[in-house]
Length: 221
Image (cartoon, rainbow, N blue to C red; front, side, top):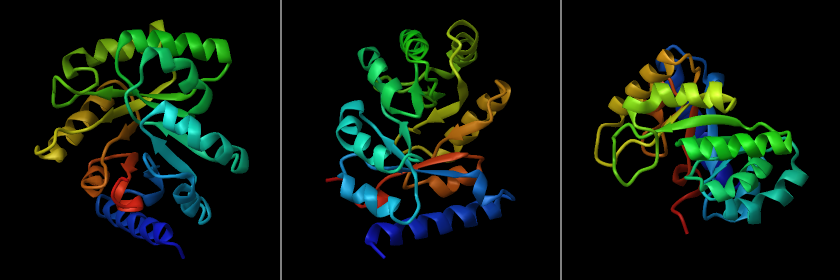
């Protein structure tokens, strides 16, 4: 087996243990393999052993890497997990199956327009800035309920869940618990939370999607 396949098996094992410890089914947690800065050959290592769900931060990098892989593996599912500029909405809708970083009204409107035009409706997560960090993308917790309602009712986006990136140096469990509470309040079933350093904690607190990069692929090049 390749190094990537070994790492995948270990991450999947740890997800399963965390899920069982929380009384959950391991199958209820989706592992999004974050392949940013790693080339298609590294993605292929995981594809070769059956993994199909990948995440990229930047539209342009994904455009260079994934169209050929998607042609070869039609069941490959690609998630956009990084910030999205409104002028990239058309490209994002064309390439991605899930957009996890819907964070503001202008972007919601741009995505809705492009989905209507393309006849393709990628599932959407709303990114929440749970730490209220000035430099970070995401809807503020105080604004979230109104933003969810606007995305659903005004823009008719297929909103399925919430996503967050806790502040560095803070206890992630507090942010994961807050996200779960906000999702429940808004009737959203899916939670994208947890990365390489804290995905087991996220699983124990209800994550349906964990976004794991370095634990699978090693340090970014």
